[in-house]
Amino acid sequence: MSETANARAAALPHLRDSGLAKGDPIPLPLTMAAIYHTPGDATGFDQYGRFSNPTWDAVEHMLSHLEGAPCVAFPSGMAAICSVFFALLKTGDRILLPSDGYHTTRALADRFLKPFGVTYDVRPTSTFIDGGFEGYRLAFVETPANPGLDICDIAAVADAVHKAGALLVVDNTTMTPFGQRPLDHGADIVVAADTKAPNGHSDVLFGHVASRNADIITAVAGWREISGSIPGPFEAWLVHRGLETLDVRFDRMCTSAEVIARRLKGHRAISGLRFPGLESDPSHNLARAQMERFGFLISFELASEDKAEDFINNCALMQAATSFGGVHTSAERRTKRGDAVPPGFVRLSVGCEPVEELWKAIEASLDKIGG
Ligand SMILES: Cc1ncc(COP(=O)(O)O)c(C=O)c1O
Image 1 (spheres, protein in one colour):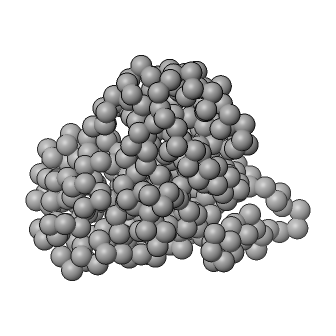
Image 2 (cartoon, protein in one colour):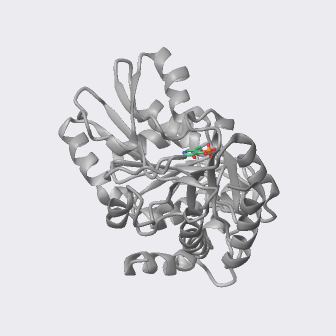
Image 3 (tube, helix red, strand yellow):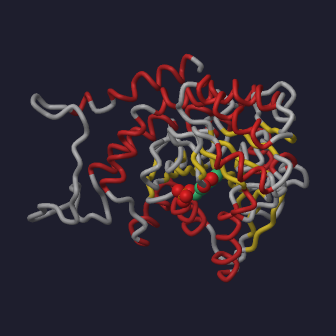
């Protein structure tokens, strides 16, 4: 990681220090409260659980530190994405989405934005800039895209999007702020599912929106307050705890993914492997320029649906599960979720297990299914 990313990581566990009075607990207390003591003029105080909560404030402080921007926390990644669309778009707007990104974002546009008169088009991530952005109010990219792991040049896209008078939103879920900071490359808004690596223990859903534009933050925070799309304090507390070890977990996962991807690529049972960290990957040069790390996701194909299922289910150190970014290595055959990929397509999320043990388990399972 760069020096600045290391400095951010080092400061993260100490963010609370300056607010501590003698005798205060060092770890974050959990505040479960729907109401607060507010006699007289309540301005400037917590008033009601839908408006504010000290545990949200603490997790937002951490996220803001990592993103270098004000953040608003949400109860899931999709709630964060909804807040951006519903707070910033109006009837007649047109938006652009990735054709190969997380399928639920397209479902949201199709089922819930279209009836309000917000239309959308889709483009592949790798050629997202082609065709320009005239006529769009907002362009939304995911880089690397889940599950195919294509990437796009955030700075170049941001520049072209801004010339067309539109906003650029980047879903940074696959990277986390330790892997990539899209706002530094010119994006207007970051959305992320902290459900994944930031929480890291697969026991909570959470999300956030980050932006250096105060009007955007005000609009998104207003959406949260009025829609009631608020995170639970306990979930916020768990994510706060997860963020304290994100740097260590992310480092282990990315380092292991680099080892595993290289070995998988050489295995006879595997084809079409994608990992931005491999020199042979079409995304590699851009990934090197734009990303701090290459991430912990690897995608590849096995010969058939059955072989992919057997590989996942027979691997002793792999959970058969959707989602990614947890301490446990997990994998999923993505046609199960309706992604437009071949039946044997697998998305592998490398976890925190010691890498040589993990590789032995992966290799044994691959050898069992044959080439
Ligand atoms: C890239 C991406 N964005 C957003 C989401 C939505 O996150 P959540 O499940 O927390 O709503 C996901 C979930 O898998 C995702 O992969």
